[in-house]
Amino acid sequence: MSEPAYFSRYDNLHMSRDEAGVLLLRMHSGGGPIVWDGKTHRDFVDAFYDIGRDRRNRAVILTGTGDEWMLRIDQDGLKEMGQPWVYNRVALDGRKLLENLLDIEVPMVAAINGPARLHSELALLCDAVLCSEDAVFQDRHLEWGLVPGDGVHIVWPAVLGPGRGRYFLMTGQQLDAQQALQLGVANEVLPKAQLMPRALELATRFARLPTLAARYSRLLFARRYKQLLHEDLGYGLALEGLSAAGLNDQQVP
Image (cartoon, rainbow, N blue to C red; front, side):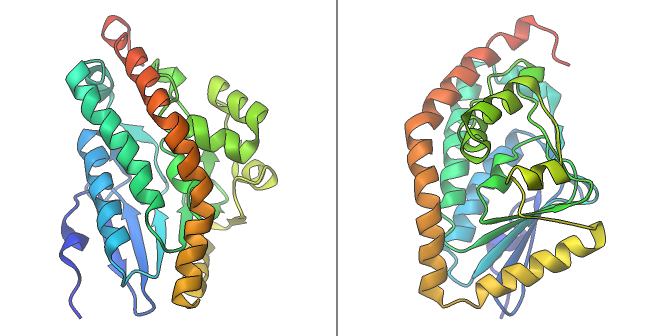
């Protein structure tokens, strides 16, 4: 059977699917570690939608390329966010990005292959989070002069608890793989060479579950996050946009 057309539609996502129905979704830029920019933001929205409506997908692995999960951002794009019509699109994509991810109604495994200092909420909204030993979690919104309002303000306090979650976001705290495991952010920590084989083993186990049990379990565990996002994501994105408006008058690191 030929691959679906959407597998090759997105420049920053490499997709492949095995006979068990496990979709491997690898983020990249030009074959190397991903650099997040406006196009990437838009493409991920559409890609998650395509993945979610393809019922031949029975489980999904989300991972990065090389030694980074997601670390880099287009710095010029940060200043552009301060323009109202630019941020209007950013905010729309920001909502649909997480909504479409949670609308993928099959189990998801995040394989964190290195530093996750950007959009770590994408990993935490998966059903299993596996980390290589060199993985690091951090949020850099405030370092860049932005309110952390794109969903991390919802997901991290939900995972760490309100006090630890606020501290993590406000201070730019770094959590290494073992700390992430102890705090319940990660489910397993593995040597680098074992990360992807273990992710595939776990995703294959999920893919072999009875179809409705697997899909409805994903729906069950995603429901609370959908409620939280509905309540607070729009407000967080609005405040992030207001903070972005000041970046044109400030030096962006």
